[in-house]
Length: 101
Image 1 (cartoon, rainbow, N blue to C red):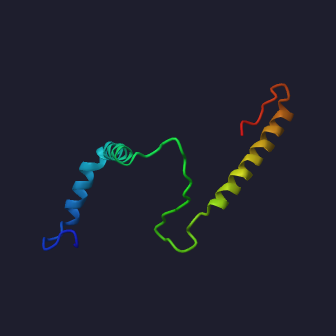
Image 2: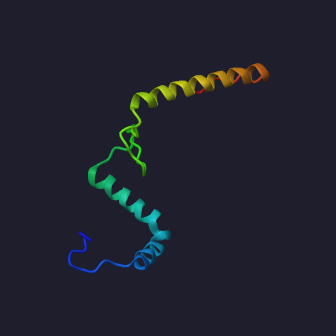
Protein backbone atom coordinates (compact mmCIF):
# COMPACT_ATOMS: atom_id res chain seq x y z
CA UNK A 1 0.00 0.00 0.00
CA UNK A 2 2.87 2.37 0.81
CA UNK A 3 4.46 1.87 -2.62
CA UNK A 4 1.17 2.41 -4.42
CA UNK A 5 0.50 5.78 -2.82
CA UNK A 6 -3.06 6.83 -3.55
CA UNK A 7 -3.71 4.06 -6.07
CA UNK A 8 -5.98 1.11 -5.42
CA UNK A 9 -4.14 -2.08 -4.40
CA UNK A 10 -4.10 -4.87 -7.02
CA UNK A 11 -6.20 -7.94 -6.37
CA UNK A 12 -4.67 -11.25 -5.39
CA UNK A 13 -5.57 -12.55 -8.86
CA UNK A 14 -3.51 -9.84 -10.52
CA UNK A 15 -0.54 -10.61 -8.31
CA UNK A 16 -0.89 -14.34 -9.01
CA UNK A 17 -1.03 -13.72 -12.79
CA UNK A 18 2.10 -11.58 -12.58
CA UNK A 19 3.96 -14.30 -10.65
CA UNK A 20 2.88 -16.95 -13.18
CA UNK A 21 4.21 -14.84 -16.07
CA UNK A 22 7.51 -14.37 -14.22
CA UNK A 23 7.88 -18.03 -13.22
CA UNK A 24 10.04 -19.18 -16.13
CA UNK A 25 12.14 -16.02 -16.23
CA UNK A 26 13.33 -15.73 -12.64
CA UNK A 27 16.64 -17.56 -13.19
CA UNK A 28 17.44 -15.25 -16.13
CA UNK A 29 16.44 -12.20 -14.07
CA UNK A 30 18.56 -13.20 -11.06
CA UNK A 31 21.49 -14.11 -13.32
CA UNK A 32 21.44 -10.68 -14.92
CA UNK A 33 21.05 -9.03 -11.52
CA UNK A 34 24.08 -10.93 -10.18
CA UNK A 35 26.17 -9.99 -13.23
CA UNK A 36 25.19 -6.35 -12.78
CA UNK A 37 26.09 -6.34 -9.07
CA UNK A 38 29.43 -8.08 -9.75
CA UNK A 39 30.27 -5.57 -12.46
CA UNK A 40 28.96 -2.46 -10.66
CA UNK A 41 30.60 -3.12 -7.29
CA UNK A 42 33.72 -5.01 -8.46
CA UNK A 43 32.85 -8.11 -6.42
CA UNK A 44 35.80 -10.48 -5.98
CA UNK A 45 34.60 -14.01 -6.67
CA UNK A 46 37.84 -15.72 -5.64
CA UNK A 47 37.09 -15.48 -1.89
CA UNK A 48 34.39 -17.42 -0.07
CA UNK A 49 32.75 -15.67 2.88
CA UNK A 50 30.93 -17.57 5.63
CA UNK A 51 28.06 -15.52 6.96
CA UNK A 52 25.98 -18.10 8.76
CA UNK A 53 22.79 -16.07 8.74
CA UNK A 54 19.58 -18.09 8.52
CA UNK A 55 16.27 -16.60 7.52
CA UNK A 56 13.26 -18.42 8.88
CA UNK A 57 9.57 -17.73 8.93
CA UNK A 58 9.60 -18.23 12.68
CA UNK A 59 12.77 -16.28 13.43
CA UNK A 60 13.84 -15.54 16.96
CA UNK A 61 17.07 -14.65 18.72
CA UNK A 62 18.26 -18.28 18.59
CA UNK A 63 18.00 -18.63 14.81
CA UNK A 64 21.53 -17.36 14.06
CA UNK A 65 24.28 -19.86 13.27
CA UNK A 66 27.62 -18.74 14.66
CA UNK A 67 30.84 -19.06 12.66
CA UNK A 68 32.49 -21.05 15.45
CA UNK A 69 29.74 -23.63 15.31
CA UNK A 70 30.19 -23.97 11.55
CA UNK A 71 33.95 -24.40 11.93
CA UNK A 72 33.57 -27.07 14.62
CA UNK A 73 31.04 -28.87 12.46
CA UNK A 74 33.50 -28.88 9.56
CA UNK A 75 36.20 -30.30 11.88
CA UNK A 76 33.84 -33.03 13.13
CA UNK A 77 32.81 -33.84 9.56
CA UNK A 78 36.46 -34.22 8.53
CA UNK A 79 37.01 -36.52 11.50
CA UNK A 80 34.03 -38.70 10.50
CA UNK A 81 35.29 -38.86 6.92
CA UNK A 82 38.70 -40.04 8.20
CA UNK A 83 37.08 -42.72 10.35
CA UNK A 84 34.92 -43.94 7.46
CA UNK A 85 37.85 -44.03 5.05
CA UNK A 86 39.95 -45.94 7.59
CA UNK A 87 37.18 -48.49 8.14
CA UNK A 88 36.77 -48.88 4.37
CA UNK A 89 40.53 -49.37 4.03
CA UNK A 90 40.33 -52.15 6.61
CA UNK A 91 37.57 -53.83 4.63
CA UNK A 92 39.06 -53.15 1.18
CA UNK A 93 42.75 -53.00 2.19
CA UNK A 94 44.12 -53.35 -1.31
CA UNK A 95 42.84 -49.94 -2.43
CA UNK A 96 44.53 -47.83 0.30
CA UNK A 97 42.38 -44.70 -0.15
CA UNK A 98 43.80 -41.45 1.27
CA UNK A 99 41.77 -38.71 2.93
CA UNK A 100 41.28 -35.78 0.53
CA UNK A 101 40.56 -33.35 3.41
